[in-house]
Length: 127
Length: 243
Image (cartoon, rainbow over all chains, first blue to last red; front, side, top):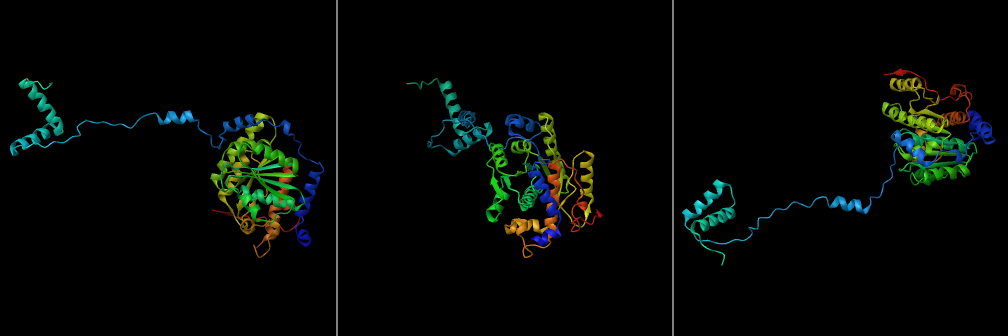
């Protein structure tokens, strides 16, 4: 190592500089009490885009608000039962044509047809 | 004793390598050196865990932005030199470390992307200087430059920095296999042998030039051109402008 140092005198110059610094020649003077507070440093940094990268815990209340914003949208018709009706081909074909023509579900056609029939005949069904 | 901070909001600019080289060179003079690894990727912590470091060179790991100021204060009380390797982002941790620095080294590779991020670090330094009425010495350090050629992009960036009044290290950390071997072999620069890498003497010389220049900036002394420091053994590139 001694031979290497002779070949590289800059190492000696560096060692001398460190030694002078160690003995207070040109040593920077600083005192931790003189430094600006963390809050002030943070504020100056944030002005030029140096912001906190630490993760921040989200309060539970904020989470609940986010979850309760909206419930899933559901729409039900109540038409969930089936029945079998014996009828002629012509009647069944007519039923299909009416539903297709009006672009309605068959359950809706049946509801409207019954309502019309009740109005027409005046039959009392509320007993 | 001095706190020397390595800052650039761009990753891969050479912060960890140059911080490690400075720590190696200063510890080799016999100085007591503490390196604070404040990079979340922990490159120097990993290096230290594999390397057999001399007693006067220590690497400590900083947890997060809430601990960096206390870590610097404690290290400064126990060491002759404190070297802080920061993360490659614009963060509060960087602001905190710079607020305590006696020298801010801003590594830059010869690319405009690095130069833009270096300018951000300079802006932060100057804002702190203005806000706190405290002089914070800083200088741009070109890293991974070619020993043989000097590209036009690098020359253009260097010229831009000088025109903007940014101090630039006269020493450039050259692209050296030995600098990579430090990390791949888990050694200090001074523990490497010819079986690990070639041109170790040139790498040592280059890193000591950088260390010497750093100390002179800290001491407020004029920086001499590396050509005039020491005699012979110069690692100055044979400068040639190339496209």
